[in-house]
Image (cartoon, rainbow, N blue to C red):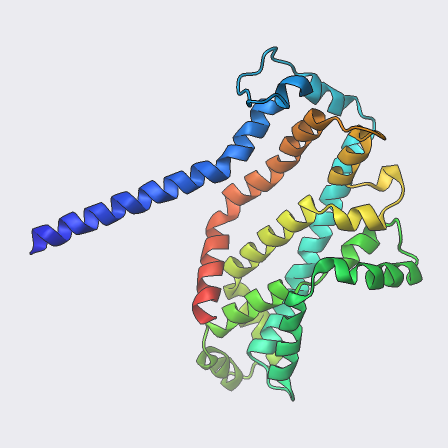
Length: 280
């Protein structure tokens, strides 16, 4: 009986790893293809059937990037905006999540339900109201205005709320008995224990803001204020055609910080997401 169960478990693990390996290869294929294409001419990269070995092998796509005078500026702009959005979301999502999870106030559940309905609204619907708002504030073509629009997220608030709910009310009740008011409970109890969720939140927000294209395209005007995705599109798009291979090379360079961040903080992202999901 035990031997039969052991064989069944072994087969289950084998098939599970096989399926996961196949899915991983499928998801990795476009990224691997982009790496090879970045060393090809466009004629070879666009050939059918697809070719994998660069012939001739060329670094011209990367050299074109570094010849762009604004390339370092676009990288710095992207870093600046992404850092502001991550910092702002860490503050707003942690405080709002704490309020919705722990504090008591009238219509709390109704307000939270109304907040969640915003997840169903397609982002492009809010473009025009946001554009009017940023224009009225005098922040059009301003990196601070772009960061302001991304300073709070519903998904971040939901993640933090679910994480704080996982603590249980007894923890905060004990802090209250010890004389801590809600603000002290947040700073001295909730916040120090929420590093995994904050790490997950920071990664998600950084990935979203680093790769954002539509928002910077709409709200930024000057070439020197462009972020990297918009700058690459501006530099290599012509009236009738687009140089895709330099854009692919630039996209690979742009993806490096996100990959490094994921490698460094993936344990926080997985732990924070798992704990929040259990409570959901």
